[in-house]
Image 1 (cartoon, helix red, strand yellow):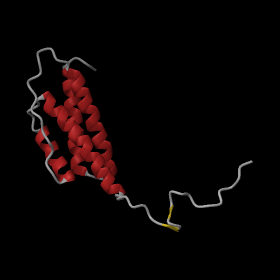
Image 2: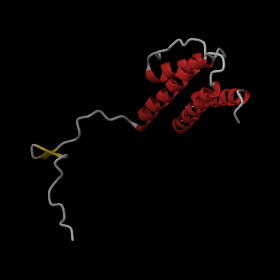
Image 3: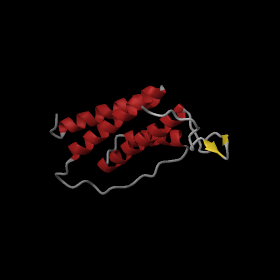
Image 4: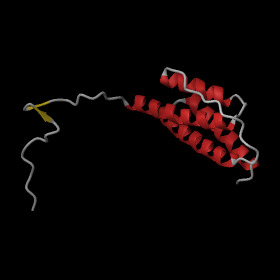
Length: 133
């Protein structure tokens, strides 16, 4: 029904010889570090937007610096207006902390796993106080 492929793929054959790809490859550990730093940076942005002063943002920034090798860019947000939907921001932060926890557990990074779990608890409590289950 189908004719079998008789030649090497054009992707793998360059100048008639087989060569390895020329793009940089990272290990699984490096890829997880990059992913973890991204989740923590997003969590840091939401934490900054909420204007929380509980020390969590500084601890998150320390871990991003450790993983990336450079300090994260921080934004200063104006105070949230009265009646702002902080519950949605807390839910978003909770979800980001949960993602960071999953990657930290996969990477066996205990410090980040503990920090992510603490942030999940803090944001879950704040979302409940804001009136959402």
